[in-house]
Image (tube, rainbow over the protein chains, first blue to last red):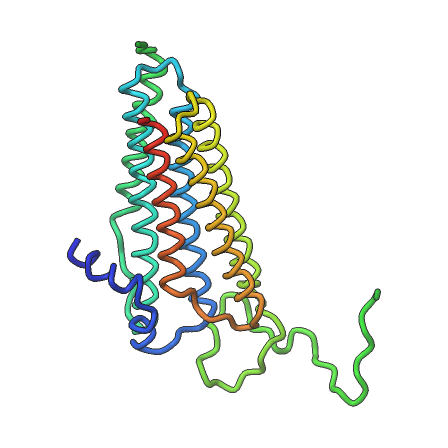
Length: 130
Length: 138
């Protein structure tokens, strides 16, 4: 978390990122960029999922519908913030010639998506209404 | 207009594949005396361009769903505002993608994405989610 706060400064400081180490092969940077975009698409899909829960499960009771939708929106926010953070960390590691950073986030996101999916199936099957 | 152009007189015809590294081989070290290939054999710039396109497409899906949510409610001022803001944010996404795509296309060895560019894109996404929360709660 402290690491995250320190990296936030780097999000807005291109000269600081560029000052370190050497420029890696452009293909590595492009690959890192595509990974970042893939995570961002995941975030957008989660946000779209939030809208979809709100729109396409009208029979659900208000609390469940809003709760599930907001959970999906919140995980979309987390995912996109983490995407740019991870991108900066990878870029720095490549410039310094270090190992790429490891992350617990994919496992965490997987668990959250699984829990939301199970909750949604249960809620729709049981049909808790009003 | 059609067919391959004839080789320029005097210019040596490069042997096909001679300057293309093996797939999977590590890229040449900086400063190594390797011939510059005309294009990346792994089509990295093209793949990057398509990744940007896919991202704008994902944004479009989210924006359409947001617009649907905004219009379905009783169209209160707040929800209309949030819905149109989402569409504006999607335009921002398009603009950022367009800028990066032109930058990648302009050079055979494009520079890395700038941190501010990446942050702007992520903040657009976060703001979309914020508008979504307003739409869903409101």
